[in-house]
Image 1 (spheres, rainbow, N blue to C red):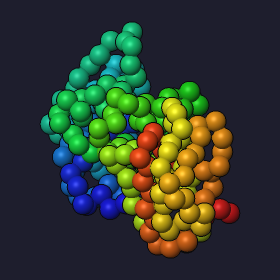
Image 2: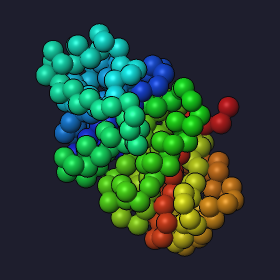
Image 3: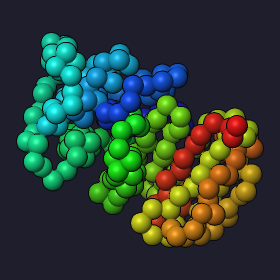
Image 4: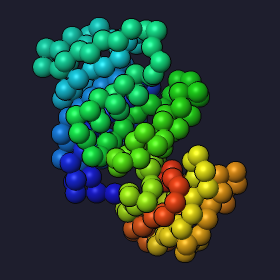
Length: 220
């Protein structure tokens, strides 16, 4: 997916430090919002943070001070709240009229957080926005009727199509080993796991429901 084709907000989650090549976030970044300790990752990646939001229970004092010195606004929330710091950051990006959001990080730490992020990003709340989630080992795209996706990669890259919340219907793909043409993937089965690119580009769309499209490197 070429992120230079559209304006997008970047939301940086906490989690493990980034390993491997730097994330490809493109040049059309409208703002960078760090969710609590995401400020540490954002600074490590050389990103200019616009806002740090959360209860600040895990962000390092050094990263907070550096972000504030460079012009970031610190938006503190109480520890006893009904949303994660990442959800607060996503909501802020929406309030700032983002039409596309790229989430960085979130790997490592508790499995509940990882599963929660996947459910959050694929939820109806953000269905009107194009959402991508970049991790060191994978890129994940939320695909619904309004937001098909084009993947750029290499033959043998793994691509998994995972329905979230309900069955996904009217799925069409090009560039994948096992093509789908107006197919349905049920939310309680694993048929969409471990498809493969057979070209440098694949296209995936759906008419009903939501897919998490997980693009990884080739299977070792």
